[in-house]
Image (cartoon, rainbow, N blue to C red; front, side, top):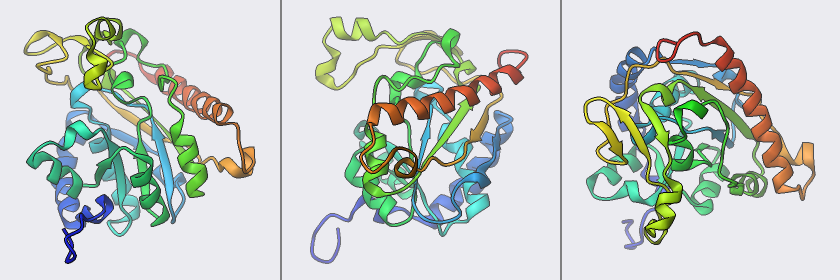
Length: 268
């Protein structure tokens, strides 16, 4: 709360010192465990707001942010925050306070727009859980489940879209199915859950969403792609679906290139 008793905006809860501590302690462990490699961070705009749009991988224990954030802060420093949009469900209890201090904010366009207007980088995973639980046998497919709101956010905030792709986290366990048809049949949509994923891993074997298995040390490679100035390329009132199709096609081509480099599952 501020002095007037009003709730602080979510972006004001970011704590650069706390974030630095996570980056400096957890970052090296994540990098070593996943042999993580982040390429071309320096193609991002040197200053100002940018909407970083990425595929999402690894299920409940996704390492995406902890792989990318250390490379970002190493390049741009802690004067420039990167906020990650997260589902409301992850902010329950004390964990929510810690996440907000680390730069995770509620996934809505108002939060994103405020952060972007203040010159921050906002990381969004349009595919959300639907994407992070995609079957391992279809791991190298960009699939946002038809969600295109990120395009309008970039246009209204007058910032570029910076595509980013990552490969490897879908090999941290064997993701068999999203279970979206099962979720529909049993009415999970009422609980804002659209999937009931089935996976196999260590130590629990078969997991139906819960408990989550521990991730195998698969090699993860992330690549940042050149910014897309939506208004410059598609006009002031762009066709959102056209822009989304272009972004996904650029990402798919880059992901195909990373996939062609891999020789073995998990090992990379």
